[in-house]
Amino acid sequence: MATFAQYMLNEPDFIKKIEIASFLKKKKNTFFNTSVILKAEITREFMSVMKIDVDKNLVLSAALLYDCLKIDSPQERVRLKKSQEEYKQFLKSLGFNDRFCKICAEHSRVGQNPNVPRERESDILELSEQFGALLVHRSDRLPYTVPEALEILSKKNMAGIKNVFLSQFEEFVDIMEDMQVMHLGLMSRLQKDMNCVTKNDIPGAVREIYNAAERNQEAFRKRKAELRMGGNLLDELRKARAKLKHFQEAPLLPGFEIDDLK
Image (cartoon, rainbow, N blue to C red; front, side, top):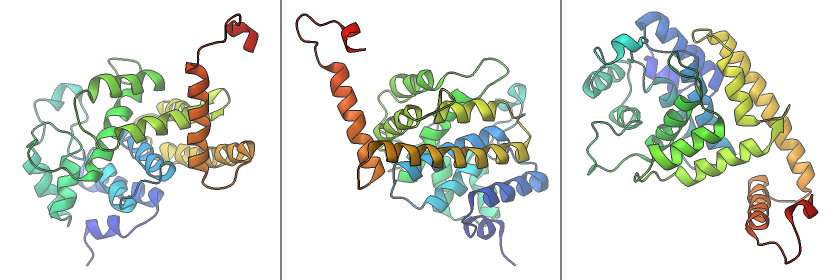
């Protein structure tokens, strides 16, 4: 009989992975709500858009499970917070190996030995966890906007921390926000729609993921047509952003004002 880990890791479809994780919640009362799905979707989009060379199936599985023992109550979260060893033993009981457990544990640096080399996949989870948490509406605060969240992530949360994917993640968020739908960047639109879904409405979150996938595909198709360039779309987006940044930073010629360029 297949283990839970085999079911999860052998399933390549993201939506079906969500269904499997939702089944685990029903059976084991694990932590799984729309905030987990939002962070996992950010992880999926980041790896897809930026062509990150990792085992995407493995990372997405970890993205849905790394915090599965968290207590869904602000009052109890500190008092009943599970240890890394408890997480490891629980995940191993589901059939996951030591490396998967290590990837999940390293989504946070709390309690980690800084002298032990990190898994590259863990750095992806760290960014989506920190960034996604800032985008989520909570009972004690409103969500930060995407630009605010990126600023906090880059300048505060990750200050002095070596994360191998940080610069690519910053670029990813900029690219997603540069493409707009109904006057909102793609990331802001995802944030808005997911925050409108109640935290335990998994079917509602899945519907929003389907909508986001269609929306993003169309936005990227239009942008590719606008650029009218051959080759890799990501490379062309980088070139376009570099040119825009160069223009924005360039000094104006004597006698010209910014209003003259509008």
